[in-house]
Length: 164
Length: 100
Image (cartoon, rainbow over all chains, first blue to last red):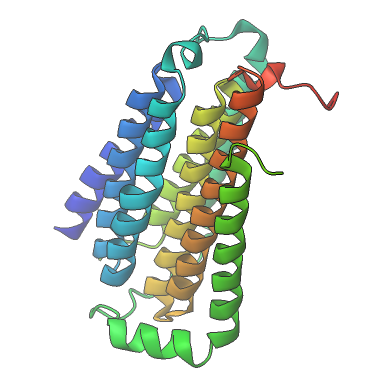
């Protein structure tokens, strides 16, 4: 049953990811990316990580993609849509990317890949995750918070109209 | 039970689609979205191994990856807005002020 659901989510995720790359309008690409991120969040639920699924929906879909859509709408979209999509001069990408994909899938789905145990069947609770985050990983947590603060200040300063 | 290879394979496919997007598209907003796709597929790998090894460190690293991705997007969109305000270009190939 889990496998069926995983295959459904994976198929929709790959389809919407292809839509992100191939659609001409950036707004359509952003909407397809939202669909893809929601599918990945449901795969997280299948992998017994509900907290990470919620974080994915909140931060990626709720914050990051809304920021993308906001920027696309603020900037002039008719100028952003000018590219002709199947670009003949990028033929090496069409040649190399499928080869690397097939190589990766051969290694991953082949015999040599380690068969790990299925792990625990119960989901990781927020309590366990929070305890680990605030005891063992406190220093990286603080570093990441400082990084977020620096990014926020930098973004505000870059977007500000004039600074004297 | 989902075999460990399946989420890893999904992550690999999504990552390669993201690579193709970065290399093929000229629109810089879509390139940023493809980078988001690649970061997300890395999260998929981390969570899959976290589940199959019964170790929650993978999820913690995935949380850090999501945070860094959010910071990266805010800075990148700030740079993009400043760039578009100064020179009206969206094409990544035409942004050659630094002769790169």
